[in-house]
Image 1 (cartoon, rainbow, N blue to C red):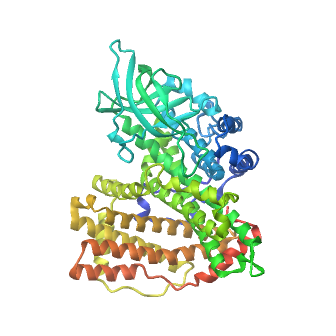
Image 2: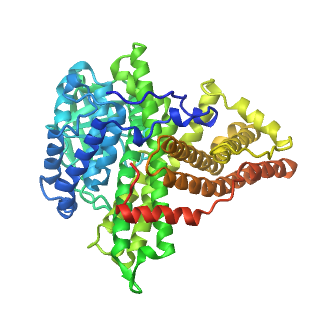
Image 3: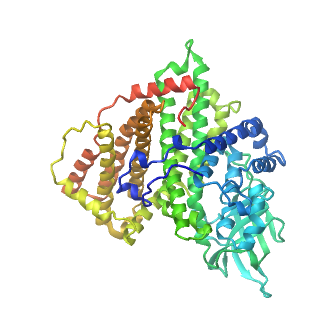
Length: 594
């Protein structure tokens, strides 16, 4: 598929490598086929899913599997799978588009994401050729439904603390599995499970377990706060005999499967949540335009306009960040293929390269959606608390996303952990830029004016990066290996990174839209400038919290002065910018960016 070629940067490299609008892929760059696929997904939700949300939540027997069957008939399940295994062979950006545009499907989006992702990808990328031929074509068509069994009662974020055990049978033909798994999505109708267990109690490994295998049983459906239509059950293994040929990957290498699949899953979750956020903006806009108080629509009130605009800005920032990374992964995947890497390793290798960005995206998307639905309920007022209005369902369904695919706290900690490990291994040079920033603290700042377009905004982004390098460099220098236990500081640094990445992504997209004469370019610029103005305050706050936690005396004073300098931005009227955005929301009856 022909899409714009992008000059990629190393994973995590956005912090120290420059990016340009020309080298930034955005949703405005989608080709015609990708737009048609997105429209197919939206039409599927409108026709098949949204009219049946109540029945889905009530788990009407057979309904969810039938919806997955219909999605399979349209090619929406196996779109990104290779053609030789029954898929359509679409690229990673297109797969991301499908995830986004099926994202507003509430419980259905959870089922389809679990099937397409963690329910199928372990076999696709780690299975033997025989395993792939046996399962992937049926998973691609929907004839078989997939699920993923990792979490246990005593191991959530600590996946390697699993207690489920597997031993080889005396005749060497089967692995006998005993243990328990919880929170298994799609469990009630899945035909095949990827199950993690420790062989002989210590070698963490993965197995393909089919429905109906003797010794496999499951509990009743869990009663959940949200995503009520998603089948969630416990699995019980009691002397469950799994053929040795169903071992997935290598003995003792199950963690490689689990962690690599999670990288892809985090980005896909971000895509789905962004789709939900855009839908949430549309629902709230429609309601605000028609709901009258004091004889006028509430959309005329400044407080409501602020909310609608901020919901849109956060969705736009997340969207800009998502497709920037999706294209990097797509390009890296292609380059690995050109280097002669096996097809089964290219996407995993590309996702591992951008694991830092995937962890950030998971936080970005889930928290953008949470903000949108929370403010959506507020705009609906008392009606938002009623099940008669879909915004209450959206609010309940959203909450799980900050827990799925590793909690947001874990993903924040992982972001810094991966940065530090890559720096130690020489994969990314953070020390040189950090030392340069330290020297800059003792120099006289240059406040010279630059009147080139967007010079102030681009300088702000560069300064945000300096603030991160200053704080992170000093923290590592001061705390050394102890920094791993200073989670509050790591969380502060992660928040600075997340805000900076979104600020840069939204700005590069806005500039590119203006360069290309896009009809919404001025509104994109309003959104970018508003985001940067607010991000500066958040980055300043996170930086102060970090500095005050490890520095004192002259060092502390100097760093706080540097932080103030690095988070200083040009004055900007965010109120008027938000009003401009809301005016277009009302004119277009919802989210209007691509």
